[in-house]
Image (cartoon, rainbow, N blue to C red; front, side):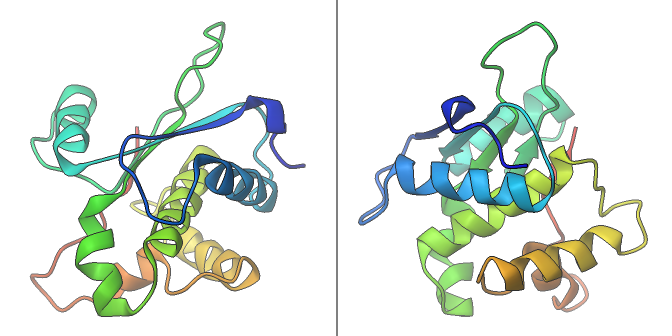
Length: 164
């Protein structure tokens, strides 16, 4: 069951030519439906600086990250459940991989939705990676976040999306 459209909100803190919050809200609902995630999902799309600050505050890691996913806080309406970083991959990685900023953000939203649905690529022996790859094809997205990280050479950047 997709997320209720009235309870899905995307805040774009950076202007993205040709993209709107409504476009990403529609995708959030599709991604939620694909992973059977119910309830409110709010997404903040921001920059590296804010992601670094949030990662330091909530995970005690002083580094930018691609995706932070927060479980819903019972009794706190409108609490954020997912935060995506727009600029980390959208500037360099997306060009290298040949896809749009819009697709990059959708990949990050899907990755975060999987975390919100209970998947954890750090401890599931590839279950999340398989699910992400399957959903990526169904949602017509390019190479998924976990697949990209797995194809990195030793010493390259690791997967940065984490579930809190």
